[in-house]
Structure formats: structure tokens, C-alpha cells
Length: 183
Image (cartoon, rainbow, N blue to C red):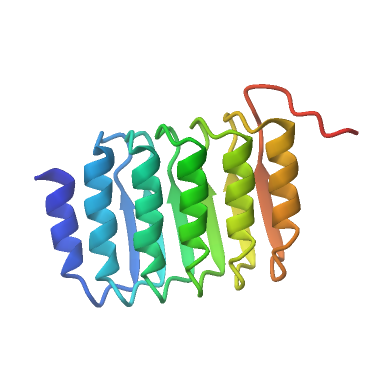
């Protein structure tokens, strides 16, 4: 039952506008996270969502799928998404970003992808996708303890510079290897 039962219950909460869900460290896996994502699609009035799914080994496909589900929450304006320690690599980070770019009303985003296996391509892809979030004004992005390197940090920075309405930015880029910023 677990995450599937929770997802079924949430799917019936069609008038829900605010949701905070902490299911970190429960080993729900890709299937459980997919069910939850699908359930959230039915919450059409959802505008504020805090979703902590860290340490659940959801992987790439599910990270992208979760983003696609959230993109269908058309009223979502505030999102905190904690996906730390979930074995997400480049494809998942880029896919998640591409999906979140479709959240047309998203203005505040806190995204924690630390302690995954995201490389330069994933960081650059995520940045390029987030640059398409036209209403994004506040962004906190944690991608520490990945492997984005110099190239990923540069690509991410160049992409985020295109966020035309961004007024507040917090980045955590601490890495497992040294990033040379050319200072």
C-alpha cells in the first residue's frame, strides 16, 4: 500500500491549495514517487507545495516524471522540492528542469538536488530549462556534492543569467572535486 495508498488519497483532495509532504528516507522508489506525482495532477488548485522525497532512490526517470506531473499543476506558484540522495544523474536533472519550465505560474522555487550524480551536462541542462521559467523571481538551487565541474558551473551560470525576472538567487555548488572559477 504505502506510497500508492497515500497517492490515491491525495488524488481525491481536489480543492487542496497548500500541501507539505515529508516522506524522506522511506525507500518509496521510482514506483511510489510516480504514483504520488500522478496523484498531484488531480490537485488542480494546488499553489503551494513542499515535497521532501530525499533518500528514496527514485532515480532519473522518476525525477523527470515527477516534474512532468508537477507541470500539470497549473496554479503552482511556490514549490520546494527536496530530491537529495536519489541517484539522479544528468538525464534526470535535465528532464526535471524541462518539466518545471512548463510550470507557467512558478515564481518561487527551492530545489535541492545535492548528493546525486549530476555532471556538467545535467547542470547545464537544468539551468537552460530553468531559464525558461518566465515568472521565476526567487530561486534557491542546491546541487552540492555532485560532479558538475568547471563546465557545468559555467553552463549553469550562463543559463541562469537569462532568467529575466529573477530577483533573488541562492546557489550551493560545493562539489566533490574542485571547481576553478578562473579568479
